[in-house]
Amino acid sequence: MKPLAVGQIRTILSGKLLHGSDEVIVLHGAYRLKQINKKHTIYFSNKRIVDFNRLKDFFPLIVVTNSKLGKKIQLEGITVIEVDDVDKAYWKFVHFYRNLFKLPVIAITGTSGKTTTKEMIKHILSFDKKITGTGMTSNSRTAHLQYLLSIDDDTEAAVFETAVGSPGDVLNACNYFKPSIGIITNIGAHHLDKCKSPEGYIKAKGEMAAALDQNGVLILNEEDENSKKIDLKNFQGRIIKVGKGDPSHYKADNIKYSTDGMEFTLVYKQHEYPIFVPGFGDHQVYNALFAIAAVNEVGIDPSKAAHYLQSFRKFNKQLQILDGLNGSTIIDDTWSITTTSLEAALKVLDKIGKGKKKIAIIGTITDVGSWGFVIHEQAGEIVTNHNIDVLITIGMHAKIIGDHAIKCGFKSKVFSFNNSILVLNLLRKIVDKNTIILIKGDMYSQTIIELAGKIRVKQTAKHGASTMDKHKDE
Image (cartoon, rainbow, N blue to C red; front, side):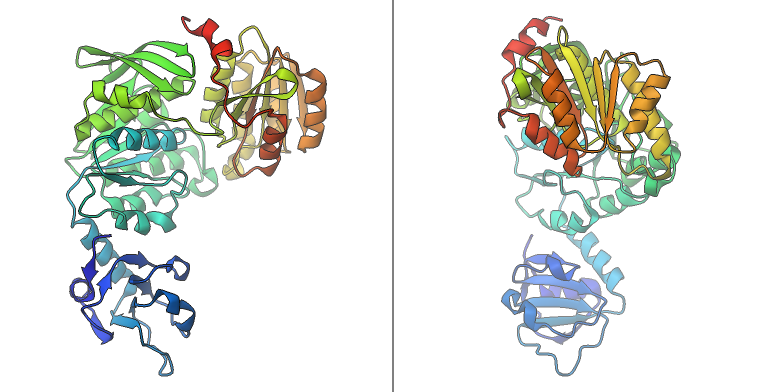
């Protein structure tokens, strides 16, 4: 955080100094007690605090409040600013702080691929610029203030992931970050428990367009059908599209599976650039296109971005190739599960599983509320479009996937279980060195995570030369 004096902040907030000094320096911010973990923190509270002693390790502390302080409260080490409305004061502070800096800010949302795309962008930019941004998976609303305050005078660019749990989440995040570049990777079916319907979810993701100003840049997936449903009639900025087709500004051509990743030719403004991106699947190609398009807007040209992208490190549990049970190969994709990411994972299984027995282990799709039955049936339809030899589902709701796949004409073997013990017993009998297993689930599903750990032989990813070389030129 850029150091600020209490007096400067108090003036912005139109606050009254009740105790302490205008000379105290603010270095951190918080709006929850548990976020106070450093000295020189400004804390916004509309609740009465009766005991500051438990926070004394973090004095000096600056408190912005509209509550009366008890007469017996020990105020040594505390600066108190009184305001009429704490919420209004908080947002005045947020907007004031963000407006101190003129820099490119990239915000990313989407059902799948947003974390990978964000990390790719951070990786590429970090070679030439001092950047800040969202941590690996911490993209909740409670973290927004901390990420905003990570911007300081030395920051040259910022990259933030804006997740959707409910309508308004993207707009809320962008009120903090005020992005100049917005990315929507794709829109599947997720968080229907709060968004109520697929249309509500599309609208919630589409808030990215409303969050950008008239000079903003919105980057979209040309081939994603739901992204085409976003209401853009009031968007005055530029739209950039990525994809495989000619309408795309950034087009991927000649896509090939290679050792440890994907090769393709980027076509941009009648120029061609050879690209290698670590990680398997066409979805990884899209992630790379988004990243290259975004960093080009920040001043990193495609040839340089392509060079930097080669050293990007893919994540554990995202289509990670491992040695497995009885000499088999494991594709561990237990980061998250939506119908969108399931389709992507099954495409990878199809490609690198050629000539092998293919087993798909699929867990429950969460955060879909009353749409759970429909979404799991959709997953069953997706399964029928892939050449799987054995389908195993884990969980009561996941059983719908197998049942509906059979109803749709799926002819291969289907097993449904509620725990990993029975699955492991089955795998020990049917798995050998000619078997490739996709395990697909959610990072919060203990059953799936435990099973993934048990069927691995090694915790480090295989380099995959023996598995992938025969597909290199396909």
